[in-house]
Image (cartoon, rainbow over all chains, first blue to last red; front, side):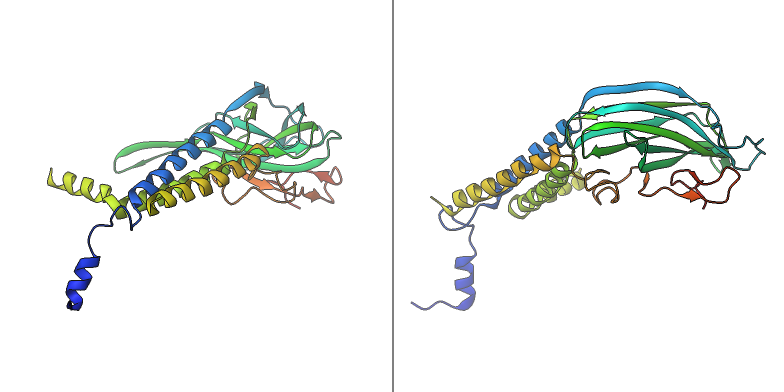
Length: 223
Length: 77
């Protein structure tokens, strides 16, 4: 019995039978479950296991840097803030988070830098960010924006003792810096990235099979 | 075993293997400064953090002689 091409296409087009075709909805469920599981794992790895240091560190001017009266709007001479440590790392590749916070007066900025030093106080690397506060007026009235904290995660590759040397420079040098050093369970990056990708693939597969998001969007537009 | 079952099992096994393989990377602090030594910065996947500097600057010829002053913007040569 001969069929026309269009009839044959229609015959093959039917819903994928449970025996022949792959139900993408079920595969999507696997991807979504692993995506959610990975994101939860990433969150667990980012959890704090021990707080090593949390205090307000008072600043002092480094004796090697000549003291200079700052002129308004000009950059003040850099200050050493403090040396914190030793930070004792017990295992290979331990993850720590260093959080820095300081209040910065309006319309000033301060670059707060942390130097990570080894047991002999030799430089390993440094990190830093500008803390600032700005005010102004626009059509909607007065506005105020500020960024007065940051945090940095780092991995100490080897056990040993380390020091953190804090410095600041800018139009304002803070008198005190709030420093928190905490140990983390590990890195959240691998499972976070894997979780995002897996979840996206799962949602796309689910959309191809069930069109959940399309239906939801249609329902919302009808409402 | 149907095609769907095969696909579900295959994807679950592959995803499970990757998931457990990533445990080792996560435990070893993958992606953060220091994971690949101190001369390489953080991973591409770690965004939003502060700027990192792998080498200190030396200020030669200053009043106090050569002084290591870190790598921030105030670290002129």
